[in-house]
Amino acid sequence: MSSGKEIIVMPSILSARMGFLAADCRRAMAAGAAGLHVDIMDGRFVPNLTMGPDILRAIREDLPEADLHVHLMVMRPDLYAPRFMEAGADTVLIHVEAEGDLRGTLEGIRAAGRRAGLTLCPETPVSALDGYEDVLDEVLVMTVHPGFGGQAFMESGLAKIEAIARRLPTVDIAVDGGITTETGARCAAAGANVLLAGSFLFKAADMRDTLADMRWKAQAAWKGNGMEGK
Ligand code: DX5
Ligand code: ZN
Image (cartoon, rainbow, N blue to C red; front, side, top):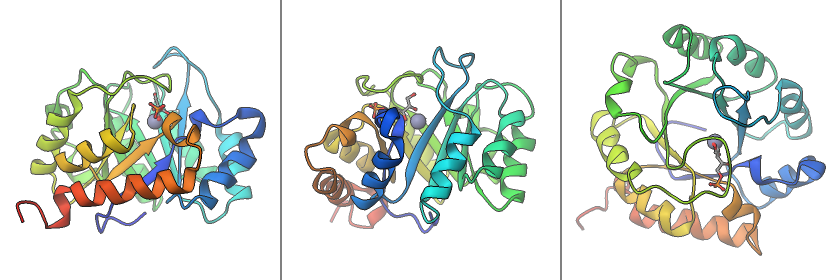
């Protein structure tokens, strides 16, 4: 993923069928996905558990060209970011609410040639990004409480996206949770350019058509497309 700021749509494989994970990852890439969003949960930062680095490595081996966008919902990203990079992550997003040396972790992700991002939970204000501006390739705004797929979009994310877009105009702004064609376009209108969607894409009758429609409508609505007000 480049930071030339373009609209990117990625399926979140939290909504894939875990017994057919390889098939569903291939299906998502064949549907035109820019990459795969991979949710890592440790049962401490959020009350759910997902996958470890070996699963990511298996996805990487099966899909060498896929952009792997790893969202670490873990209490100690300083301990786990290196392991997921070693397993093949291209982007590593950590939570600003997590423990440990967050700045050092973000610097380490960049030093390894990967993209680094900070994630904000719904209750966390944009001011939590203070002091990290120079080590961010991406900011992820959660529009649900992290931990589970299939929750309803929280409107409160829109004002945060607008504030981040004003403050960090060159940084990619991602949105995660309850994203559909409709909520994705609203987030794009607020300034988000990376749309992450789990249940909406994996439940779609035709993932390719739905993904293309999401991208097209977000592109038309997007603040960063230079067309606003025209
Ligand atoms: C939630 C995860 C999301 C999740 C989104 O904690 O971070 O990536 O897959 O699922 P949907 O799109 O179904 O809300
Ligand atoms: Zn996620």
